[in-house]
Image (tube, chains in turn purple, green):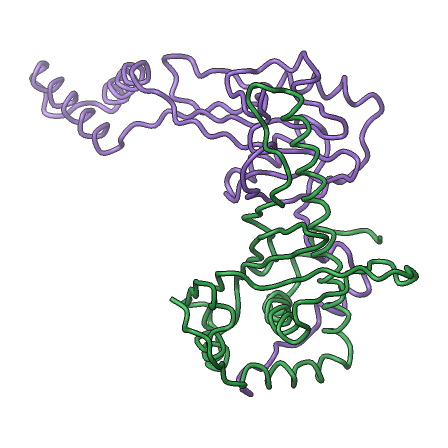
Length: 203
Length: 192
């Protein structure tokens, strides 16, 4: 079993500090929470987006029953999988227009009413959703519960935003971007935040 | 460590990262790559690492409008780099190598948030094997240990920079940095 990016390759990740304390007996609580927020497949007819937890390196595995597959004391290793079905918008709009034109011809009408157009659009969405495979995004994380840091294997702001929300919803803890400044006292950081621009023009 | 807030880090002016990257290149050149990373002042035995710039430096115009990417072995030592600095450009991204006790890390520092990315960990670490669970587990632990170690080293170096940047020593350092920048590069091929 591989643990995805946590176990191999270059590390391209953002580091976050976890704010707050771990609850007592967190291993079992987190297992339940990961299970309840695990990834659910999008139904054939839907065009919705679906996000949830999966085992890192095993995007089809949504069971957190076996602790060994996600808790390598003191590390929690897991991934967020997001599926989204997207249609080519230009083609979709053109097809809706064609269907509306056909409706007008069939009913000898000058225009296609809004309510009918809406229905045609929904029917087409349903039809295409069954034929369309989702775009899958996987964002892996390693949570060092001993030192209170999370390593998130992405640079995408969109994925980071989703992760923040999912992390809070699942574990009840907030995260904040980690920075070398963390090693400084508030007083030293204050002093540093007031430094003036270095005048390179003197060169 | 005192309480760290997101606001505190977000409010840090971008000049801090710009100066940090410049300081790193100058320090590396002037100290023959040797950096003291002893975290505890009371520690008797000093800890050192070697820090050298690698093959990639990105510079931006003062208004951030355009960027210059220098690549190749000589990029951090090139006249192009110094000329760009003289023109008023600043370093926004730099690839570095840190070596300690035969362990070598290559990584990139980037942006005003000083992100540490694109990290190649020391070769000695085994990579995870899809078939062998224990091996993968060991790989995660080893890699996280090394990652944390690298972060600690970078934090100590940044801490030393921060102390220097906010003290009277900075004016002295700055005049030495200026001298270094104005010093012409000799016998080094230009970067790509």
